[in-house]
Image (cartoon, rainbow, N blue to C red; front, side, top):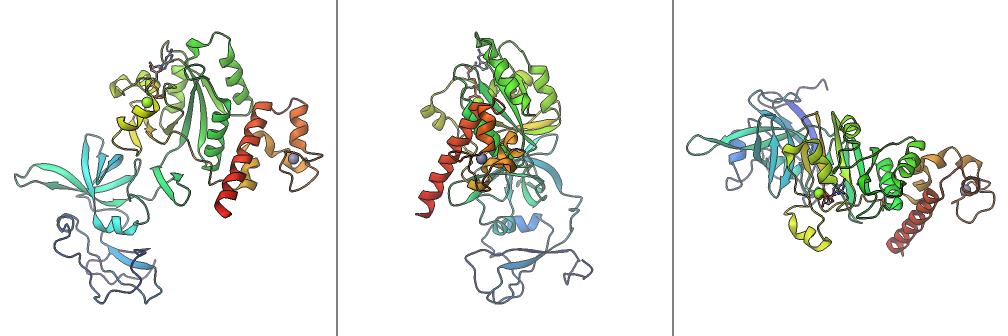
Length: 383
Ligand SMILES: Nc1nc2c(ncn2[C@@H]2O[C@H](COP(=O)(O)OP(=O)(O)O)[C@@H](O)[C@H]2O)c(=O)[nH]1
Ligand SMILES: [Mg+2]
Ligand SMILES: [Zn+2]
């Protein structure tokens, strides 16, 4: 950076987004939060800040933080494991601290629902109560996210979890019956979100027709890691452990397929509630719909996202859909028409590959289904 920031104790100058509802610059050069606004945060957080807007058009403001990128040694460091309303549970490796979030962080990311999400690496100051007992923390700094998992509600994109490496797409061969299209939908979502996907076909103890291997092979042939498991008999669990160790893995899949049972089988101490619950009771069962970060003894974590079972594909541009089917990619250049959408066109390399048995018809059907779904989404949005 070179330039010395003009703060008292020195520090890092950072440009952050202004609150969208504040167009005009403030009159005062020095900004302090009004006394009645949670000034406890400022007592414990040893940072000074000065806030200035540059004229009417500025959408950013500069904050100066003491401590820079290496936060003060008195701060504790941890991983946000769950967000519950205004509180964030932070695991420092020894215990979980309930933490609030310092006001400036909330202001910085006013557009987000919450400035801290599960998986964020954070630094926090510990606050003592009137008896001097340490009781909670105040998060003063969030590390830049390596990855972020987002969800779109049609208008806005929300971050669900940070620093996730891969997704475990869980389905069951029976109860509920396996839906290959759902697997393909999750694969497209993972591919679009740069998440490595692992396919897990659970409840293989209920497979009387030997279908599990067929499904597993289908995805292995495409280059995905795919396993057959049974939380009931223990089949495939060693492979699953190997795939999860040291990675942060998002759990994806319909309710009832056995996600919680698999996690319990791998780490019984987590003792997650399991049961085939109906869609209506499922809603009331969770007090939160945000992600939960469950640390694994084998290293890494699994991220459970109650309420967000279906990874969203709505934000994928229609003309990119074909690129998210791995077996299509090398064939696309052979379609006769450059704008081929691989549905009715003559000379389409994808349809020919399906006819020749080189592309699985079920995968092609998933493509067609998603193509029409995304076309409809575009229409309803722009008409
Ligand atoms: N037979 C059989 N049942 C299973 C298996 N895994 C889970 N279940 C049952 O399926 C139901 C739903 O499991 P749960 O882990 O709660 O699914 P989740 O909603 O995906 O977390 C429970 O009744 C489990 O006992 C399995 O591998 N085999
Ligand atoms: Mg569950
Ligand atoms: Zn084509």
